[in-house]
Length: 276
Length: 347
Image 1 (spheres, rainbow over the protein chains, first blue to last red):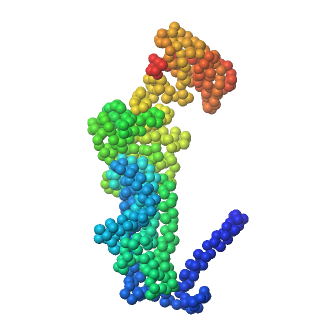
Image 2: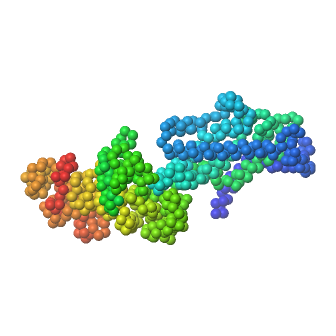
């Protein structure tokens, strides 16, 4: 094994050199949030927790607390994940298994939407939300986010359903179970890895969404962390890079945690039902 | 329970796959639907199970017409080629699933599962998952699950196709034993004539959506209804020779088999000769040359090109000493010949 390993060293060294700038920037990002540095220097000259004060008090006097923003983001990401997964689960089953009218058209549309730069629809979406009275509400942003995520979710789940043998359902039906019972007790457990992966994936996608809340909910009330972060850097009253870095880390931590905890489940989404 | 198909018709879109098929299976009988792929045998089986909608005719379980009854309400047990076990459930849960769906009590389910597991001899596997079982064991579980709710009919869709040769022999007799012990009416779909002949009381041989002949295995082998049946049954398979029946029975290659007997004056026809009816001293001699010899252990298989044309197969006990290239003058048992019209009908 040892000589085998050694042959990788040049590649490892090259990759390390290439990614060094990124790694160094991340390290500095972390260091900057807990230190003070004299202007023009790169060596920190003191330790401080003042950049993390946003955890206990609002950054601007009349602004929202970070926890309210995190709560908003959490609601946004969770709602997106739950609705996307729920709709994908049922829609994908129908597309995979039921001989319904317009199925081919629907599947074709799904692929087109999957590849379509949906953001170009933003003006139309804006008008519709305005018309429905959902503009500048979290509900409106969630609905749009869900709609944008669904083609991907349905397509992924359809792949998982397609890999479940027909015979399992046929056996279930002859065993006396209704189609719904067959789906719930026999098919759903087979696509459970896909379900978990999609849930996490759409949560992360919701958590990191920036454009939709920015455009469709620009007012103060339903802000999420992504747009708030942009606001910090744009606001010349509090232009503070160390604060920006600290909030960034706060914003990225849940994502990192989820990746670390669920990385096995997330890999499933690309393995799309290779097990029968 | 007696099963009757009356004028059963099945269409897929504009294509009629099965047109007015009649079939009667007696109570406790095991019948094979035998035929090449695409002949409609699985379609028929799935229609009986209620998985395919019936486009015409009746399907009777006893006196009850189930043609419009849903699969759930039909009470059939079915074993699929890939067994279709539920991978996330233990063996006991798999077998008990039909009872669970029916809402039976846990103690009752447990009792029935144990009793059926004993019948198919998987008592010690009840806690395993399907993935932890061998092919033969999975097959037994599938059989137990199909039988546990005491179905009116047991349907077997190519149940042995995924097993290796040795297990297939074992499961052949196991399935038959269980069928006889439970006395259940059973239908076996297969394309393997050996399976059909060794497991079933009767065989229904199918071709393009129709039953060509239905009879006991021995009867079908000895008395095929037409050329198709004769060619389907038998391994190594039957050989055909073009011939002409005037006063005498003369092969297209010129050699004669003697007086034509009851075939006299039939004109051009085709003769079917099974390998066991061709060999040294079996009847009128034909000149030929051995072109191929295969050793099967207990016996040897030969292919002989007749002088003037035509090829016959012979199966002889091992040790005949005949080699490839040898000239032979083996005979044909004329009384065991099958004669077919140019259109394939039996003469």
